[in-house]
Length: 277
Image (cartoon, rainbow, N blue to C red; front, side, top):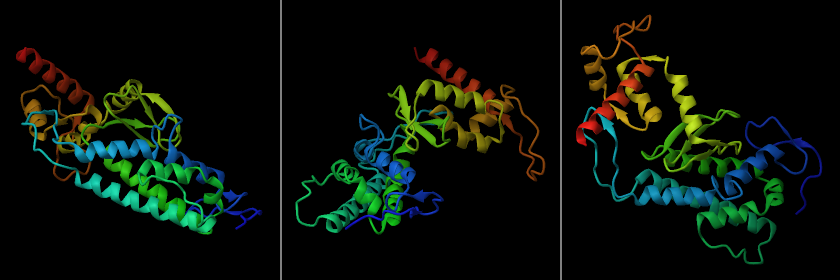
């Protein structure tokens, strides 16, 4: 089967670019290849994703560092969402790998071990097949969507840190607490986790939020929960300044500066550690 040798619109959904060598533009093809294989060391590729999913699935307990309430330490034998995402990703990768093989070869054994990383690696080794496939738009859309959905499950796991938006493409960056460097899975940029986290906290400090809004935002900012009751208790005791409600708020809920909450949380945690020692 020969690939088109003329310029035509890229078949990836909603892509405005022109495909000069097949049915996918260089941006969409490059993005898919990066999603499949990641960086040179495999970071952010499907093999790395598979390892992260396995960690999430087999995690025996979920522990949270919660300020102002008892931690939830309910043992779980597996993470249902991660298990579902892994199965769906395997199905999508396997379906398109088989389709590519039947379309372009169909005779020689692909010699692929039935693992997420090996299947993704095999697909990534055939960029011309990807670009020239008659259903290239559907292919790239389904593969990238399945990979992105699986990464979202991993990123939402309690042990992942939100590092803020990528300085280059604004895609959200997440990292494990033991990683010094975090990579953007959209553009491939690599950044120091400590620097990104510091920038994230600095940008959020002057934001005003209700107690409920702050409690929802703080896990991503601090890597721990802070209960609504704790915030209201600190405000009642005069340790947390109240600010005017948002104009138009019929409930007239006071707002609090996130920077003040962050500082108060650090002081409370440090005080608890001192008492424990």
